[in-house]
Image (cartoon, rainbow, N blue to C red; front, side):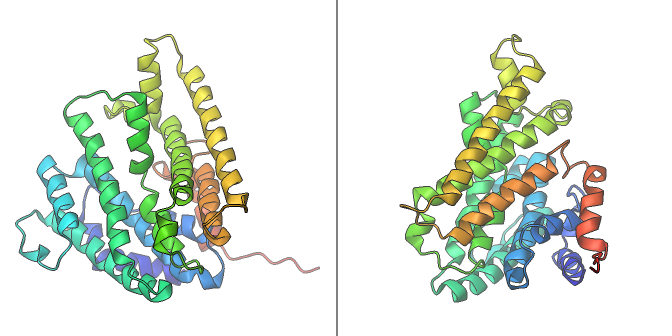
Length: 312
């Protein structure tokens, strides 16, 4: 509970609660961290996961409908510059609040992670966020310009815009093992992220298809139906996507268990698998992150309800 109080306080300190467009999901973000990284020694990884989950939710809402094109471009520009002169920039209050929260949080995590990893980490954390924002900007431009991407274009961009990079990758630096730069740049590391993100993107698209359709947004369900010229039904498309999810999950597990030739430490690989599992909890029946009632019981049981100990 203390951790959740800390998160609520952190949200208010950073004025994120003043952003009217942003969903307030502190409990759900902490639930995903606490249910995944529950051991006491994982406290820093847990808080990194939770805070970055909150920030990705805010940024996602900002790029979806909270910001104008000029504001989105302004935010990306500030992240590209990443210096202390941002307060002097001419930008909206919304952009200032979001960038200030990012700037303070990334620098704070960067200092702590750099001490643990014995090398500079902050530049990598900034790069992760910049990559995410550029992928979100591409989706925003598709909507604004009424463009219809190919399915391949959508998925190549969509696994990044699902926003697991800023959640998983910074937390890896707090798990324990050292992650040299060559590991971070290794195809195995990149593939682990791509596989779990692909699972998440497809699960989200299946459960969010109806809602996003009403909002005028395309996703992989509507694109598949569109590209079939109406010959494929929604049910058939979702079955096809479920097979793709199963395939990505199987390949992810293979990489996690692989020993020969693996450069990513097993405790770090386990985090990708744990994220995959929590995604299935959120998207088992519906979009549990957007539809709060569906996840309320699970969140309460992990965060609020006391443990029941049976005496033998």
